[in-house]
Structures are given as C-alpha cells and as structure tokens.
Length: 292
Image (cartoon, rainbow, N blue to C red; front, side, top):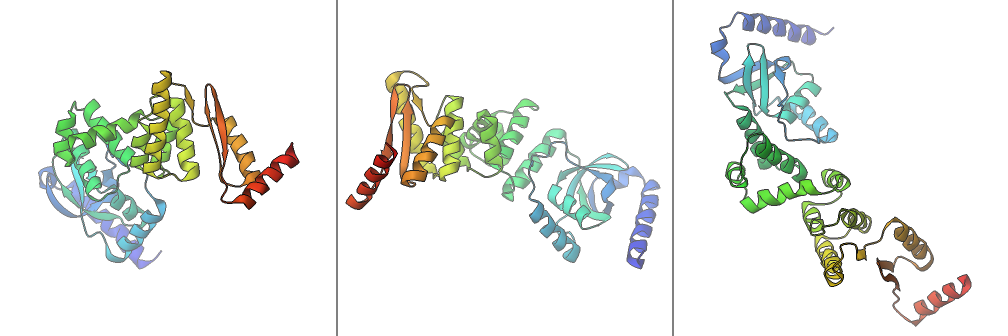
C-alpha cells in the first residue's frame, strides 16, 4: 500500500472521528471543504437518466489532475447522511477518480427545491436531454402540483416550451428511447406529435431514422399524411410504409438504386423510380424486362 493511500485513509478516519464529536448544528449549512463521499447519497429526484461514460471518464481525469473546482450542493438528512441536490456528474467522477472527500455547500432544501435546483443546474449546463427535462417537469406537476406557468418561472423557460416538452411524454416508448439516445432531435419528436395515430408515429419515426430526415422534411411528411387523413376522414387512411412495405422497398432499391420510394394508403399506393436521363430510363426498363 502506498504512503499516499495510507495517508488518505488515515485522514478519512480522523475526519470521521472528528465529525462524530462535532455538534450537528455546525454542519447545518455553509461550505465544507472536505466531506466524505460515503456521506453523500444521490438526489432521489435526479432528472438525468443518461450519463455519457466517456465524458464521465474525462471529467474524472480532470478532477484527478485539478480537483473539484465547483463544490457540490447537498442538504442534510442526519449527522452522517447528506442528500445531493446538484453535482451528480461531479460526484460520480470524483468516485471514479478515487477521491475520498469532496467540497460541498450545505443548504436546507425541501424535496421540491431539490428537484427545481437540479433541473435548473442541468438546463443551464445544457446537460439534460429534452426527454429528461420533460420527465423532470412531469414530477413537478405530479408530485408537487405545479402548473406549467409556475414551472416556466422557476426554470426560466416560456410556458409553451414547458408544455411542448411535457407533450414528448405522450410519444410511443420506442420513439422516446430514440430521443433519449439522440437518434432524433426534439424538433423531430415534436413534428411526429402532429400525427394522432401511434402506429403511424412509430412507422414514420423509423423512416426518419433510416433516411436521416431533417426536421423540415418530417414536418412536410406529417403534413402530407394529415392531409390524406383529413380528405378520407379516417385515421388509418394513409399508411406510411409498414414493415412489409419497407422490405419490398428495400428489394426495389437493391435492383434499381436508392431513388425508389413506395407509398401506400388503404386504397392502394404507388411505386416511384426516379431517373435523370434516357440512359438511366433504358437501364430501368431493361432490369424490369429481365425480371418479368
């Protein structure tokens, strides 16, 4: 065992012993330079779901080199237990870096304040995924009965922004997972919410991911689907490529190239093969003739 490790454990034991004999009122609030990491438990309302392992390792390397520059924010539960309010990534990285102690600021906080502060900190750092923000806002509504207007004032977003984020929670689970994994953006997700049928949302989502469609392209696609629905007054009047259609389209693309699309409705559909000149058209006709 190295001297550094022995010293670290020795200090840990001394500080723990010292804390045991310290009046609890002395650690009610304010700045503490060294608090044992084992005293700190995660924020029960932590809004973050996903933390990039690579970035966590990078932060751990930085902390190992320079220490923790910004203290963690905690609230006291009892003399040896403090709940984290803000600084989840720093705490995880500190543990990863092998630190026994971290600097903290202790403050009294209600459960609602713990969630609000955690949300605001992450929003300011642009650390939260839109779905994570939506889930955190939903907790404020469900657990603490806050209105959209109240949430908007607390987190510094407009009321429509809060409402739009909360709408993301109505997406099918597969689409929410794609948003969390950054396969689509919040703009894509909000465009998909323009569809009222869950099956169409799912199929359209797969097309968006497969074809790397822009938000504007998705908005146009949704507009065309809804136009067809309005005309026929049936929710399922337009089928935006179910699994069978996608497989058939793939076969056509393997034969004629990527410039093939199939669109279907409950009354039929069409196959479109694009070409640029007579030579390409002749090649298409030749391939069709060979397969007849």
